View 1 (cartoon, rainbow, N blue to C red):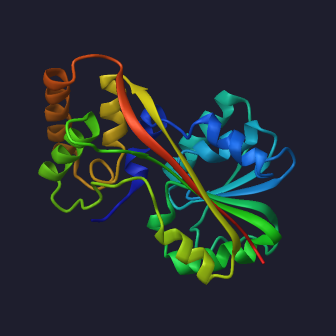
View 2 (view 1 turned 135 degrees about the vertical axis):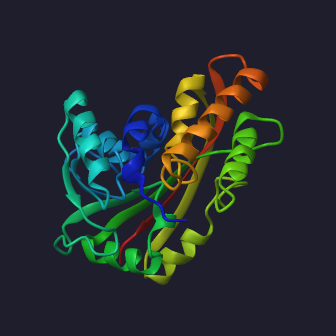
View 3 (view 1 turned 90 degrees about the horizontal axis):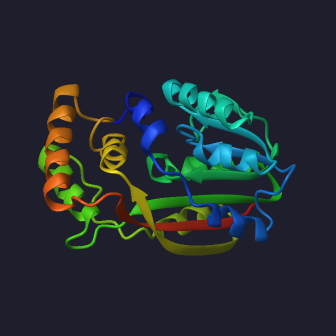
Length: 254
């Protein structure tokens, strides 16, 4: 599939739930995301992770190749009363100076990168001992739940989408960072039910790689209409309780 999240910027900004506050609290307990720290957020999208660290007093820069996403991020920042420096760039070649950051983050995006190149770039960007955080906030499909139904419907409308059935754990990322020379590897996770109205869940799914980021508008509309009908028939109660797994990896630059 050819993926362009710029086409989903409006739905992405409006409907996609961000990482839970608990994750940031636990990272702060580990000395990550403290006031005054220089943070770079890779693959920032609409700035969810970048904005959360800025609200906690960090000095935040963020990069993403999709300028429409960055424009949406800046509007959300303005509404939140924070400032983040945005740059249209790729994680593998940011163009930013070496050893300029205390923390580098990658939220819900490491799998889109050329991972060895991204890990090498992060090592270049971090100060010695600086921390990399790779984090994911994934819906968890279990037989009979709303995420399971939604994934079957995505596969019906977009057979090229092969990202279903995930368990929210990303063990391969440990090999990426260890191979790049990072140490002090640690992972943590917790589960949470995220409340979504039908409208917001439909928007959240439209903003995914398998729908509006890769399908033409008429196909997106056809998917959305069937998704709405199935939700009304099989999951009529609102809000939905959509099971998500929050998972993150932290490691230190040499």
